[in-house]
Length: 244
Figure (cartoon, rainbow, N blue to C red):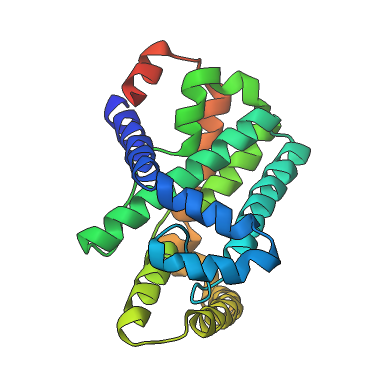
């Protein structure tokens, strides 16, 4: 709908504004990340003048953070392309996912709300430019799986909780890198026990008896896929205008 696309446009506008306000800080981070090791001592001396930033107390060094972000982004985009998504669509979809997650993270953390839901999906945004025929049945199927994982519910959305944890660590004088290790271990254990619990409950009580989690919530995306395949969405200049 028009309101949903306006919300998507607001997410892009918010992140564009934030990145513009952070442009000098981002430039300092990039200089710090890619400077030579021999210049680290000089960089520490320049901290007092505000010419650079220090990453010694960050969860990860800036260089590692940038490398992992770029590598992760292109690996998931390449995997999507190999699975059947056109490469430009894959890149656009994952950029949209990142933008929406960052926007919601900012709203949740600063607004004090528990969680948010979007009234749109990344595919709704991209298809306003290219339509669903360009993506194709294989690509649409792959993207439905990804939207199910990343965008269906934000109850298990980690970024606001992680951000709040790092913010609280400042007042507690905690080492952020130790906190990151503890968070990663917690996530790994949570995934393991969640998988075991879901399999146990499904087999012991029957998935059909456990409510929507094993029912419509697992099939909702594929009903949507069926509708799109039966009634393809065409590119729409009106939809593009709603994004702005």
